Image (cartoon, rainbow over all chains, first blue to last red; front, side, top):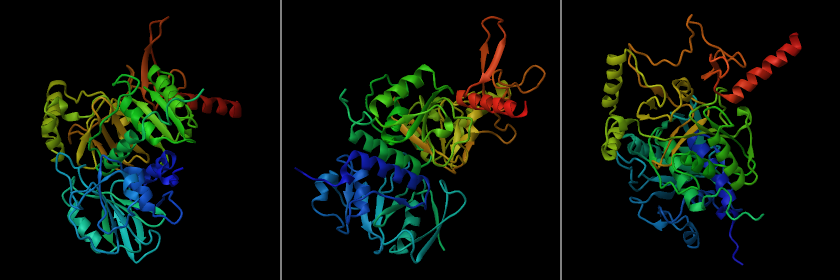
Length: 183
Length: 292
């Protein structure tokens, strides 16, 4: 009998989707992700969103070979992928797709693996849709260069990218509309 | 009985697509994100866009409210609610706005202010406000991208020239986060200000037109207007210029429906939001018990 982790089941994916929806509706809010014991929460995020209709890039080789058939997504270079999984502690080395003026949704969603979303050296102050006034967050394991690169990617709104920062157990979203200041 | 279909009727691939689409919709407030919109066991135009969103969103243990024109007992609401009850075992339903986790609605936003932990799904027949001034979707997408709504403003101006005011009664074009203008679905003007800085996320689904869009919480939603012709909501004034009240509960700050009394032939006004009306009535009854 084939045994798969609960992250591939419909019930868990529904709950993880709602966590993602809540996270992207409230930038800066840290939402728990149901994930496999000892596994990556980022894999649970990918399991929730991906299927054969979309492409994925894994430039930092964070995935195991056996994850790919379950994700069903086609492999793509970071410049062309719909979803990009990468490490936060290394500066961005690629140019993700930003969408076009008539179709800004044809842009990449970045799932960035960081050490912690609760405490860290990088202090950010957030403003924009979904944020009631101001939101503060502190992140460990995110190279500040990501924030600078993100500025370049999102400056031509509605073009841009949406960031999902994921640590071992939770997610925090920075959609393209969020104004981020390094405190 | 063994259920012949899985939880939520839709297959998991359909749900995933709707989920990906809705996340993009929240990330690009007001932008109509295209999606494939599956066949549902009811005609397109009967709320299939809202229904597909609800089915992709909802999980066991959650409580749902379905409303049609403010009422939980109208035919569209009854049918959608019973379909969801049948296909989503473990989901509870309610008529009370405050008890619902998810609210699917046709043509109204509840009077009771929604909370941050609630989510509103609106059924949309015509998602694109630019369709009245531009027939080509390709061109409309370009205009939306550039936030070029000059032709829509001219249309509103023509209204002012002809009628001395903007005559749009529902589906009032509303600008989200200073960029995209949306059709907020056929809600009356009365409900439009509720979108502005709403605590709850609002998702809009157009099944026939295959679009999903969103107004995220704490986001600007401004009805298009002119400096010297500001946006205004329905006044509900009687001949003497007094605000009409609901004939049932006496509330004078809700959206009213107009009925004709079949016996006397008189016009009667009542709250459109059935749960709001019940709540006002219950509050009065409680007050009467206390104060005599």
